[in-house]
Image (cartoon, rainbow, N blue to C red; front, side, top):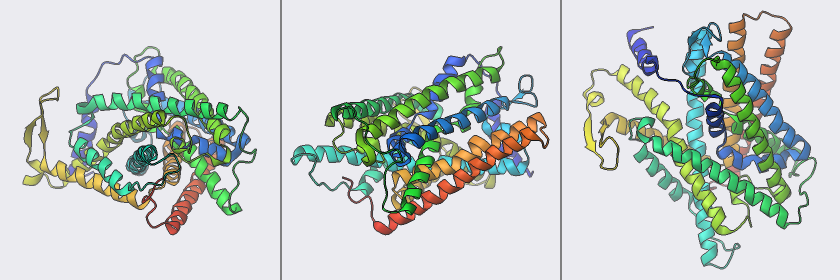
Length: 469
């Protein structure tokens, strides 16, 4: 490793080398897991169940939950190395991979993590725009004679508005300066999730309580289209369960004794169990209420609940996405800035900084570096451009689920477990590799389905966000 790379690595790991007080318990860890897992992916579950049907839908939700829980227990053991109880701590997902696997796999893990982070930023930009357009449509309907009113809601303008907010928030040095935003985002995620569930149940009851939909799921124009929809549904479910990349960080908050891995396994069981019950409730309630017509985003369903409550849910979603975007963006900013600083260590532009006073901030001022201002703005703008090019909610969530599920949730935890336990070829080794291979095939199939749906959607409309009704 050359000096610049070593320096960058030291910077990356330096903050974690300082000991900090660990007071977390199984209940705080459970709360962190539920907060990390439940997000905008929950909005696509009714549509996902609709594509899979009354049997395959709940089974898919339960199946992904089982795989996620099992690999979470393996990942919990990787918190310490080489022994899961007495070894040295690994305080990030990347540290754990670095402790057990080869440099090549560490590099691949970094690629998977950062692509997933950036892809989620794209997905959040799209989702926020859809919610803003839904609020505008509701307002238009009130002013122009009911839900059937046609209104132009320019997705481009709304998306740019969301991105301007992100450009401003991105100038804060790190998440520690906007902790309040993360707290607000977490509260908002629970608010719109439970509002969505309540509205779906209310819609179902208002229709007499009968079950809509079909055992085999929603019909499609062709068998090929049906296949793509099923694959998209699986990708949406995979995305909804993704939290492996923050598991190690959650575990690093736990006190010991008892051993951290033991506590984390219990927290994973409680957190994933509670989330699965909630997910099945949301997915099945939405399918029961809307049948095969369940929308890709449950908050955009025609005739859903009182307008004011739907608007509150969409506003909660927007606030959540504003904060969650920064949670995913800040690690990317930090990585790019470390690379730039190590690449041009003597550049005046890189080393210049100015102090700006901000009255409402607790610290009173913030340091602004021109090169950070430019880099962060460029990243947000690039993210917005990509979101404008492919503004397709379910397809993008499916693609993100396909890309993140296998490598981060399955492959690396299994590989580290094999390395830690020195498991040689035998029954257990083949079973673990078989599970990894099955999940890989599902991820590849979902990725193909998502890309195909994006291509087909682009063929149908060159400007799909021009009107959102």
